[in-house]
Amino acid sequence: SQFVIIDVNSLKIVNILDKLPAYGKTGIVSGNSIPSTGSAEMFFQSGESFYNKKNYSAAIEQYNKAILKDNSFEEAYIRRGWAKIKSEDFTDAIADFSIAINLNSESFEAYNGRGWAKVQSKNSEDAIVDLDQAIRLNPRYAFAYNNRGVAKKVLQNYKDAMVDYNMAIEYDPLFSGS
Image (cartoon, rainbow, N blue to C red; front, side, top):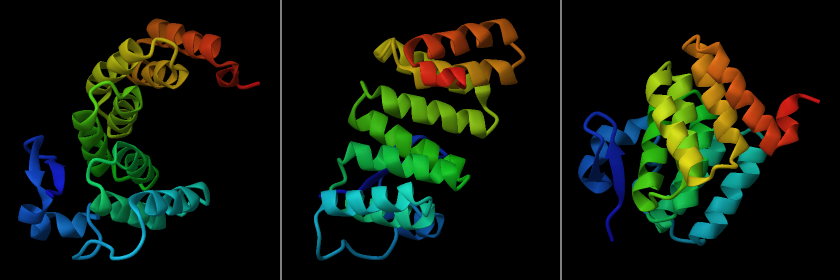
């Protein structure tokens, strides 16, 4: 089987084994071989445990192992993307969400994650494109409305930001701050 990633410079899918020296130092892959014991789901759940404990580097390591076991594990790319956002590695987070989108073009969670990573990397205009797509795919997805509101606020589009914040609250009252 092939192990693929998105080359963040060209945004093309490449076989990771061909690029290992170039990407090995970025944390996209940990180690030189596929883990010999454990399933992709087991490594994923271990990653979730570390993520919930806010140990993002350990979570990334476990998500890496899950992906090495199953390179089509969409949720592992999404969760690794969020762990990379928490680690302020926005470029690699964008790459992970892009892989998830390549695996499932209907993944509103991946578009939302990539949009948020773009907001965090000071690219709010491109973020809005992804967040619009997340909302098109799931019109009641409060997180995407909230994140798009942040992107619009960064761009000083305060009126539209308020509309998005209100939509987020409508779909999930927890966004009201109460």
